Image 1 (cartoon, rainbow, N blue to C red):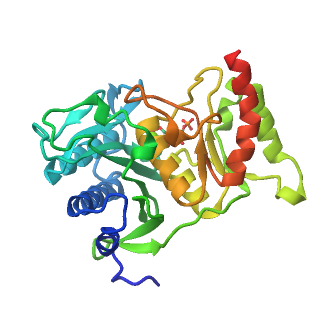
Image 2 (cartoon, helix red, strand yellow; image 1 turned 120 degrees about the vertical axis):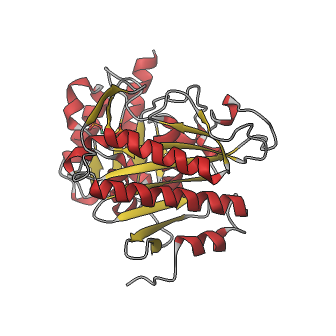
Image 3 (cartoon, rainbow, N blue to C red; image 1 turned 180 degrees about the vertical axis):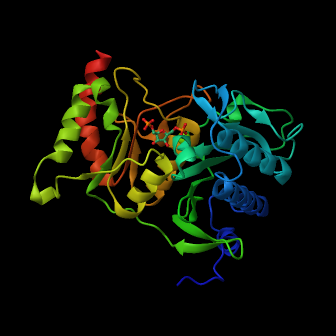
Length: 340
Ligand code: AHM
Ligand code: MG
């Protein structure tokens, strides 16, 4: 039984002096993100009865069908960021351009990047979904006006990153550079309560997550890697079990707690993979590293990538140190071959 007194609010205040970014406004911003999570969690629970399932009939900037819940969760998140009066710009999977929510922005310290509804294909079947977020401090918080440079930043410059998972319970996991903590929403009091303190990812697991339906498009070394997972070898606990929720948040959460790896590699059809660097890969990469794990494109550390576009996609291999390192050894062969 967790102590109801150890709330997210209390931990934020305790960390205020130690975190990479420790100040009252930062604490308030994370509280606002938690508020958005509570509202979204509530909407997800009543979606089936409130006519919120199904698509809007539109296609987003990613070329994907927009679900009603994609739009709703995006509006909630944007509104809460605007009301916080702490944020200059919001970048979202659901918006083609960055949105200025901070007027002339002078004095606004932060930019927030978000995938408001990760795993949206699960939204209509009462499956697990998530919200993934990333926070950067503006290069010059006193500057008026917005700048693209504030947004196209390496993941290593994030000051907070995390996700909210809407499953049987709603769980918020985040890092601000002082390890990773997880909080479970106690709906009766509307508080996130510390439930997973100082999470450490096992250095090796026995599970892998990949969409096997893409097999026809895989490069040969991805096939060899996946064959390797299914071979019998007691010393490395193979064969590994395969999992695929269809929601990165949920698959990552399992791996964070139990070890293993998640892969959305580049393939012949999509050499850069499917997932977006700024609001999917980079935030989870920082969470993974802060928990002792590893995140890579197969070739380079996710947190070292200099973004060139807001909605840039990159291959993602994320999870336990040893498993990701092993996957890199396989995949680097194919990357070398495609570059020649
Ligand atoms: P989304 O943010 O539009 O939902 O896309 C990202 C999702 C990930 O959560 C998930 O792991 C992956 O896409 C599923 O892809 P696939 O359609 O190949 O199963
Ligand atoms: Mg997503």
